[in-house]
Length: 401
Image (tube, rainbow, N blue to C red; front, side, top):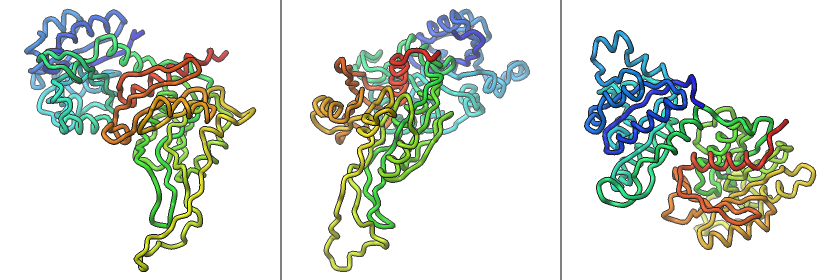
């Protein structure tokens, strides 16, 4: 599957570095062209000889080797790859990447590269949960760095928790997903809603919610990578536009409703937006004042139900309608009831109660409910949730002739 694909593997410090040897072997078995950079920390756990024996290529370590700079300089290493994979990615190395440091060959290559980057974090659970590491990882993901893992389980230090590097088959799957995207949705048209809506009170204030749009945008990108012609209807969000996706921006629920209706017909609709249930009647023409000392009384009316309308669109109904149920209590029961009430085919339930970090965060834990029952997914990044959902959608459709 990877024949002709060029990868640059960066092995940083950590006991999980030994797994990089198995990864190199599997990549070579699949026909990948592979070069390796071994950091000083990584060299404490694996040797250049072992990496070069498995990869069949010279292993690079020293940025200031004149021979290396003449034959394969750090700029060329940075550009002469289809994908850069950091495995394991230690807390220290993630911090270097986030800070844009370039004090060694590996970090200099990453700073000079315009190629996609995948990291496989591995560290102690306390280090992974530390605010600095979380902030560094979030910053890298905002820049487009992709992540696989870490997983929860027994750690080398003897503790138990999240921080164990993803298993090699999972890393392989992530690499293949990036370099050999599935095209099983080619010929299909997908509609995705994302982000919050802003329901104006006056020209200054509005009613909104805490949705960031990360999950909806990730789903739109995943569907596009699988070949679907994808339309994303997005409320106000700071998320970058997914590549290869038509993005239609709206603010209110009414605007989102009208835009979704005009996008029909489509084959699949995924309603991931956190749409405001209510709008304010009689929008004020000017800013409401508090001169009287009494708070204004806001008369509310219900917004149109986008998920229900798409599920009941008659001849224009998508073949597959997927909704989200963001709940704070009785998750399973509330989501199952919502699926029945809205008439959608699938619903993904997620807990957005205080402390979960789902709204605005990078991770999500969902339960997919369909006509056959419920399927609990492990906690994953929102990008991984999107990829898994896109594959499930692809499996639902038979190939287009």
